[in-house]
Amino acid sequence: MNIFKFSKNKSNYYKDKILVAVSGNNIDEKLVQCAGAFSNPETTIILIHVIIIQRSSPLDIDDENSYNKAEKTLKSLENKIRKIHPSTFGEIIQARHAGAAILEMVKINKPKLLILGANKKENEKFDIGENAQFVLTNNICPTILYKSQNF
Image (cartoon, rainbow, N blue to C red; front, side, top):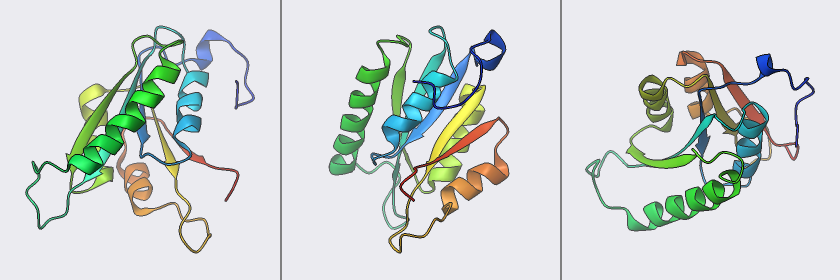
């Protein structure tokens, strides 16, 4: 599925790595589809899921419920995209701030593209969110912010 209107020229593809920030919500599959649209079969797609740890808890705390949810999300997405991209893998990160953790992963992995999603707030109004705002302000690589059509 090509969700963007562009030709399939090699120049449109990102050949190295694409980093996709997922969070276990309903747009994760669209983010992975977007990564597929901007890649070729040799591209490594890295799915990251950040578990937020409150300041009152140690950063290395075992939050088994959050970990199991993140693991289930990553396994499901990995299984769907691996048919096209065999070098796809997921990582679970525990951090105090999701935006900072995403940027740290960008610094470590040096992707050609970062894809993240905007989440709908409870009042049903579009709000880019503080994590996406932080990432867009401080990021050092091209970034796509995906917004669901249901906003």
